[in-house]
Image (cartoon, rainbow, N blue to C red; front, side, top):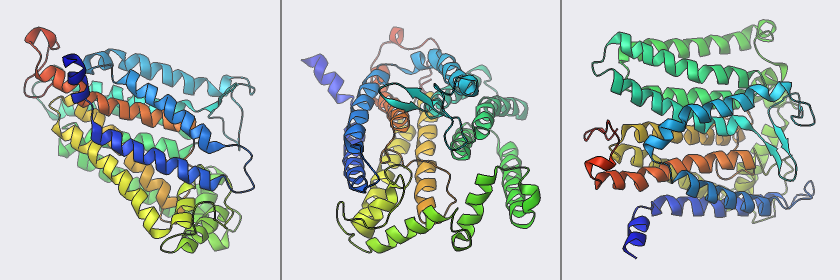
Length: 399
């Protein structure tokens, strides 16, 4: 009985509440979206199934402490990387080409599996390990050691990001870059390196925007035609009605919801595949400004909770993981909601925990399992004897 109390006291119930509320919102929104005549499957029930599988994944992940995660980091990353690299070499019956992209495996009886989704989580674990091990190895920081750390983080991130970009899947590749930026910011790398690096990155981004706007012929050599179409339709959807079809429909749907919305299943604006990338448009139409604001508030509460957990733990490895998970979710929330209201171009990124999708939801639940693990194992170390702690456990850093 005492052992059971110790276990339950290490569960993060605030995080449990956030997940439960997001799951309820997801099921209601997907149920509402599938009332459209375009659907002949019960995606709400399938999403409930994936939430059940995700809960099992959380219970599995939570069993691993920081030392075990570090030992598995390279193996997990390598496994996910191989799955991504192998995609174009697989028979099309196993890795089908959809809309000109090869990014999914076909799983009989379950649908499809996108390896780049789970690789995001494996990347976070490995980047956290690299930073933690680097600081343990180099007690005295110099510009040279910080630069070496940056090179390691960059190589581990940019190689899979480049491969995913060529699938093509720009949206997911950008998530990898966002995770990299978050880990770099919290890694303690000297600002004399960070400022020129990110300043150069912003300058390059500005140059790309200039080229796309003023030199479209040259831009066609750098980006795929569908990517350029999304950029131009984002800036002026009325002039590109074919490419801007989703944006125009999304704006119409959200605007027609007004303050309180039209109610569950009463949406009138047709948006293809609205249960996935454009689920926020359904929420805006059916539940209005109030409903959309509540959903944004719930997502913000989750991100805040993850950030708070990372700040409170004394284990630096866990802090880096929380930073990566918080950025992964934050970037996808901003990008997904932004593209539905024309604030950002369409990139095909799901709304975390809300959009339908087995691969994406499994990745998010796995990431949340890592956050659950922070509190679950931190208290164990806090009251453990010296023999129970890792060989190089630092009382100040917790790593």
